[in-house]
Amino acid sequence: MLEAHGITVTPREMSMIQRDFTGYPVAMNLLYRKLENGTPYSETVYVAAKRERFVCYEDAVSRRFDLQLPKLLVCIAPFESFELELAKMVSGDPPIGVGHYREREHYYFALP
Image 1 (cartoon, rainbow, N blue to C red):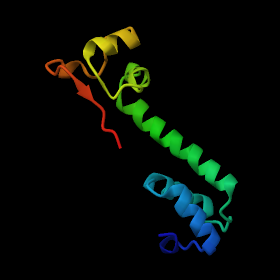
Image 2 (image 1 turned 90 degrees about the vertical axis):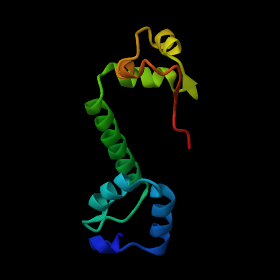
Image 3 (image 1 turned 120 degrees about the vertical axis):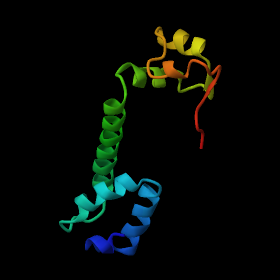
Image 4 (image 1 turned 180 degrees about the vertical axis):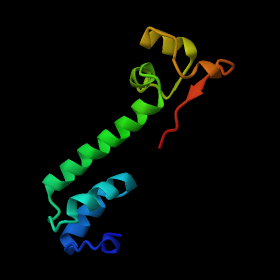
């Protein structure tokens, strides 16, 4: 993939990139931009791409949902599943964004 973008890396750099970016296609796109001017792959490049990846994901969540929903998700993250009452208890508010699923009794997270 890097070669398709005109980026050449050493075998050692490729090994580090595979270790750091496997499973993160968005991060690979960010990495291309960091390496396209001939910058060698390093911890500094990794940290910068990781930070940008976080910002991309944060923006995607923040723009898609009401501001209270990310707060709710953080509150209920420790639980594998939750019920409406648990969401109200941990957040102090009814769960914004899940209200239209009120007919369900239980909510489940997709776990890896």
